[in-house]
Length: 206
Image 1: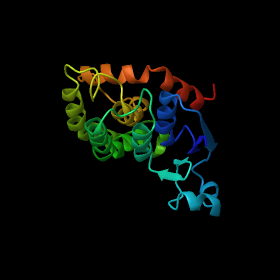
Image 2: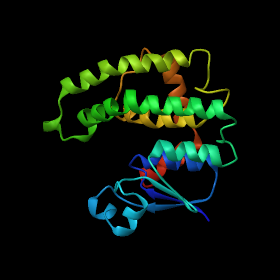
Image 3: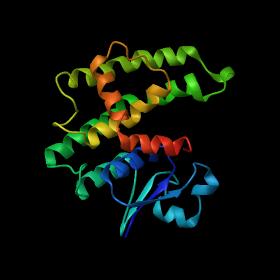
Image 4: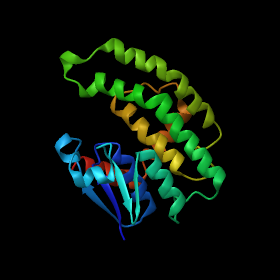
C-alpha cells in the first residue's frame, strides 16, 4: 500500500514531505489544514487523537510527530535515506531531539515577531531575546560541522534534514548567522537539494 501523509507543506509536515521526496518512494499527500474543523472529524481522530498534523499511514502502521515519522522512514525503507546502522539512527535521533528542545520554540517565536504577526503585534525585544538565546545552540551546531560536510557520517542523512527543517524558520525570520560560517555553509547546502526545492515549490504553489 502506498505511503499516505496527512498534512500540508506549510506546516511541520513539510519536513516529512522533504523526507519522502529524498527517499523517492511513491506517496499520497492528503491535504489537511490546521483548522480545528479539518482535524476534529471522527475519522481523523482515530488516526491522530491529538488532532494535529502530520500523520503518516504505512499499511497497518500509523504514526504522528514529524521527527518520529522521519526517523521511522529512515529506518524502515531502503534507499538513499536509510540509516545504515544503530549508531546512525542514534545520532540522527540525538540531533533531531536536540533541535526541537534547543531551537524550535525560539525560532518559531522569532518568526512570529519578524514576519508572521501583524506589524502592530510584533515586539522587537522578543526577537532580540530569541536571537540571543539561539547563540548557544547555533554555536554547538557550528562547532559540530567544523571539518565535516554533514552531521552524521559522509552523506546527507535524516539528521541533516530534521535539523535543517527547523532552521528554515530562521531563514524566514532573517536570523543572523553571519558569524557561523560552518552552519551557514551546511544549511545552504541542505536547502539547495532538489528534494527540498520540490517541497518549497509546492508550498509556494508552483
